[in-house]
Length: 359
Ligand code: IPM
Ligand code: MN
Image (cartoon, rainbow, N blue to C red; front, side):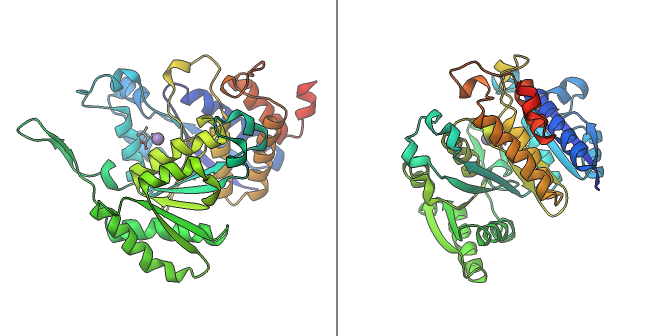
């Protein structure tokens, strides 16, 4: 029996709706397996700016440090996107949170679900069986470099990586590859960028510590093409912050929807779990958002707590929802289910009561 404290950062747009379903499923897990999860809801993102002027209030950060894990929905609001002059932005909250909590490795699994193969715009025979893990460096690179405007009206964003920043995420990726199909692909732009050449150098130095793992190197432009052309070649894909951001959205097309991809952000202390999608403001309050990415993020949270059977139970319930066609509108041309119905169906599955709900 475990007693754990989880900070919930619903955020903006559809964030609170999908988080509600993640929490519903975690509550079902607690009930089924006899754990106690305490949920502490806090503000981050545009909602925090509206309430306090700060996208990451001190109170939120303090609550995260008090917690055993953080579950995050999504942040972002068009009123900031369309105003390039805005000084305070919701994204600053998320970036500061990742940096403050030391979440340097963002792990994004990409799976092709058999039930959804027909739904992907990609050809079935190319994507069937895809099972990859993207390791995205999360607290360095161009996202966190010096940025600004010069006197003559130009703008700059600096990209810097230290050996240590590369090594720590690389070790995690190698370790994961050892426990999977033993292949690691480093994605970079080493033909042009000095930071990328350092990535190659550090990864080459580390590789001998993982003799079972075959290392492959791809330039990011080619990798973007290979992801669509032959995605099954990838096992563990390791890359820097911005390349990882872009390639993981691309990879979600394999799964069939951006609303299916979860992630775990880990460092040496606390961990955070969030869907890879954004706040989808147009869908807010309509009940059309897919909660599965958040629910699978909750499953990764359970794994992080060492609760493998509990995590497997959630993943099975998700599979069952997909199998039975309990799908949000972006995944079906039939009658769609709402965010809450999908979440409830999965929660019932965890409680082993799914059949009762369908009938
Ligand atoms: C993500 C998002 C964020 C990122 C944004 C919201 C800052 O796109 O988590 O992938 O770019 O990291
Ligand atoms: Mn992104």
